[in-house]
Amino acid sequence: QKEVEQDPGPLSVPEGAIVSLNCTYSNSAFQYFMWYRQYSRKGPELLMYTYSSGNKEDGRFTAQVDKSSKYISLFIRDSQPSDSATYLCAMTSGLGNQFYFGTGTSLTVIP
Amino acid sequence: EAGVTQFPSHSVIEKGQTVTLRCDPISGHDNLYWYRRVMGKEIKFLLHFVKESKQDESGMPNNRFLAERTGGTYSTLKVQPAELEDSGVYFCASSQVAGGPDTQYFGPGTRLTVL
Image 1: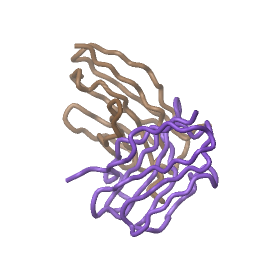
Image 2: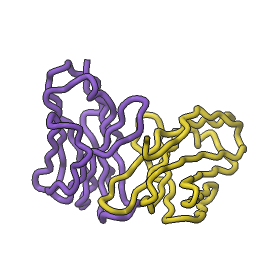
Image 3: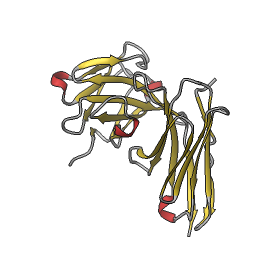
Image 4: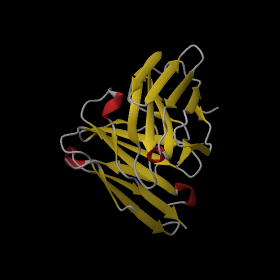
């Protein structure tokens, strides 16, 4: 069983839509939850991270963590064509710094 | 400030050959990580250096992979001999302080193709 499960998509939405991206995980030791954005031929770029359960908002992006369900989400409001990228969830127990990644969800925002 | 750089950006080699990938972390970053993404799979951790010491190499797939970080600056990852299943994108990341998840900066990756 994979440590982290993420629907690969692809996901295609019209500009201005609200996008919901999700991951589930199996390891209850995970404490830090990250969302990375990756453009084609580039390295992953950290968007947001959340410690333990709860919500975190940054501009148009909101990250949610529900540790009881082992489920994390990233919401993108008022999506823009520039948001078109692959979104990767990642998590770690905070010990040893090894990150566990999802496979990524490919998102296209259509103008 | 320059980001994490990796060289080459793309390498195509024959099975059985040797390839060396290089990563230059952000200046002053003591922590350096190698990750790999095989096509269709998730990015997986390979190993973690703190300065020149290997902190965690639990993700290294086998003894055909050798990572070094002499002098605690740049790092190399050598694959010898390369096998078909080694194809993928190899990412390097660096951070200044271990433990904080918002400090790992990723390079653009080296795409390795083994024929």
